[in-house]
Length: 626
Image 1 (cartoon, rainbow, N blue to C red):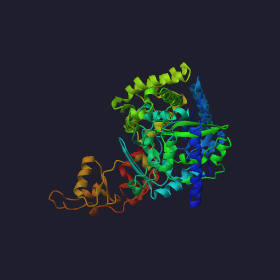
Image 2: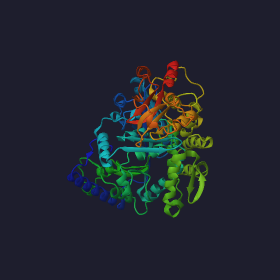
Image 3: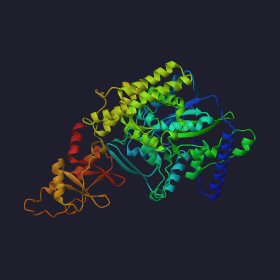
């Protein structure tokens, strides 16, 4: 999807032409593999840095296009959301000081972006897997980057799916939402690392990248929250899969595969299988204008760009993705690691990249033909388990259970050291960056662990909104100093300019709602209020829609002592004239509504769904702290 000239496949001719180019590309690729026409005896690494943009109050900024224009550097490109940008780093030959060089290059780019962002309304750059201050309102379609390729992809995916996208993630908290566009995918920001490989051992190298995915991910998670909810240690894994899932109920019944996946089996015969399986399993959804014929170019000694094959692969999202490229008529293949999250610091990211590359390069000979050693289900299970529980997880490796910490320390780190030495990486780089991984393992402090510990601690004193702001602000401070996460201390002191302002409904509402059904006994509502020390209970119908609110004042007028009102049900007592507000309703507006309508509560509704309740007491308390 890197090209901006994509369009939806709308006619039989579109489909026919695209498939013909796709078949030409795969035939050309197969011939290139059999004739050994790829670059060898050299390896390069590369990376793509996705970043978040925030305002001076650390909430998402939509100024990507203005900041991009100010930066004026073709290393920077837009991303799906207007609150994101991407930096494409130059390739480095895998040797000597390539990783410290990569850190210096990335630091320079981030400093440049930060300087230009500051000129646009004091915006700032944040490196984090999922920005803690993101809210549902930030994911409105109007905040999608206004490029044709993004709108085309959104429209095509919506048309295929046939209904709204649904999001359901369960961790410590539970997040259940419906969304109308693919913009939820923009919540994910990663540090994508590329490793060029030799086609001669591509099968074993790709399988090895799959096998180590879970163990590697477990020690570098950095995305524990989404929309204020505490979910997976690396929530990006669940979010990305669901945010662009095309399958509706009928598709699921037919066993259609998701376009975001870890994979389904080992590659056993040829690396071409990966592309062939994608063509077989996934229908093309977009096309473009193709001038080349890959087979004709190949016969003329020109290495084809394989635009149709790359475009089709660009609509599929594998956590380890095989990529084809050509530069100066020299073709190569590389593995793209897409699961490493952005942040917590640049040093952490480079350490993560070096760790992964080192383990890749250190693949033991006995793990060739890996299907003889372990099942694919083990590798896939480890990946999901690592995403759920991070560094605290337990893995299954070749049938034996082992903790992620012990496996990283005793198996992966030695493999990484050996692989990096074999690749002639400077010992100083090896010691420095693997030292960061070792310290992270020793302290058991990943970005996810630090965020969750501080979220729980701060939640005793601040609103959910303010907790997210404080965490994001501290992340920014540590990142400016480029301090690796194992050295981060908890938030104990708070700057005077940070005030727990209660000026919006979403900041003061109660989101932990206790509801009764309209046919439930009022006696149940009364007991719930007494048990939970609350004075308002929303009433819902069979469709889980709010139909009214019961006030404790009304219940207190009933006499339950002599069973006089024992048979009264909720819908007989509810106030149907309740007032709905949206999460962004101001404190001033809430004050006016409460006074004007002479009511004691306001229902907070988003897209026709009840998400919270603001009571008169909440508003009075907010007024005193304003």
